[in-house]
Length: 95
Length: 506
Image (cartoon, rainbow over all chains, first blue to last red; front, side, top):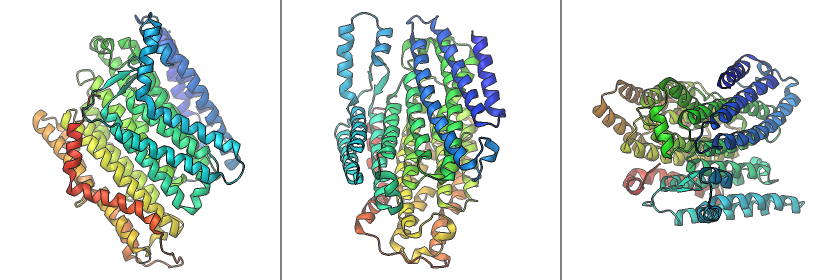
């Protein structure tokens, strides 16, 4: 499970760093979050006090949903002004 | 949430637990107050159709002033740190000091919004922006108290999501662009932080930073994964601190958002993240992670990047963004000292930075109200037309540089002497480099800070704007802030005594 989590995290990070489409980047972030969830649930098995990790992952799922909602709203807004969701073409200001 | 965590840590005795929770609630009054204010604002917004701004402003200002007074009155420097809700949050005097600072900065930001004709509609027309601002405040309040990885994550996300919304709310191409950049950087940084936290939990078997099992777990943990995990958690905090190398979002966000919001962004999440970082450093001491080297390197990088980028800016807002990156680097230098003197110097610097930055933003807002923009081109020659505000701005810029007679000088002096003392004790080369680069960068920063007064006084502008006089009401807060910046130079011992008396158990 930990290996799977690490794989998911790495592929998520890879997607975030290489993809140009906003939606793909968001999917990558989601993968990273789920990798962390997987880790938390796995480690929770060895926890003497039990359940800390599982409760943590419940919170992460909730927060991730809220974050995704805000993210998609902002993506729609960006699309309205730029007519694209390609990150390379969203630049009217220099970093 | 609280009941869940409580019941999983201490099964049995539900009545006893509920009793403890009830006792804990007493210490959460400021947070509960913020939540009630948010609800009031939303309900008021729904009930009334027209002319909402007066009512919204009334609710907000009365609530914030009440909270400020309450917080100041209940401030006990000698109070011991008190874990609440089964160690989920810690009630401490240090956190309370920061909370007073946060309330002050939100009040100043809202005063800025009221004085500005352009922005006041955006802020007080409906409740959205105000609710998001209060959300940032609530997140920061929880963040400075949190002593548990779960709590840190939830509070960081609360601050972050409200900040994305604040950046994105309103019309404009720039706003949407800044918001999407902020969001993608922020979400990625917090995902990395979360993954680091999951490993910290795995390695130690606890998410409570103060618990025994966390400390014992750290001693037995394998070194390499532990270092990677701590570094990942550091990433998320560096993002909130707006520090090198996760600072790229700052200039665009600062440029696109209205000044009052920027004033909040540049102070509240930054200082909250600083306190959590201090707590994390205290929890995982030097034997587990080489904090001094890493923080030293990050601090040097941040000073160089922040100061040298600020030299080439043509807009006061972007310049202040890079200046805040540089100041974050100075704060990191303070954290890297890792002893009591260093802690005090860092907190002193943080609070001085809060005052100076609020004054700077307030005055820039006043200039913008008359000139209509913050670009350097527009500022030229305005000094003769608005002499009083320009002189105040000169004083604040001197303070941000770190020259006497302002509190900026004391802050830098304490910080550098703390670094030097620790270098003399431990002979670690990284601290010497931090000291040298810091001194060099103070000189560099003089050029871009003084550029604004230079433009105001010595350049001839087109003179197409004919500003009227400021109202006394608008001048008072700015004058008070600048006076406090000056006063704390002459009586900095008040501040130091206060810090000495505080029981800084993190």
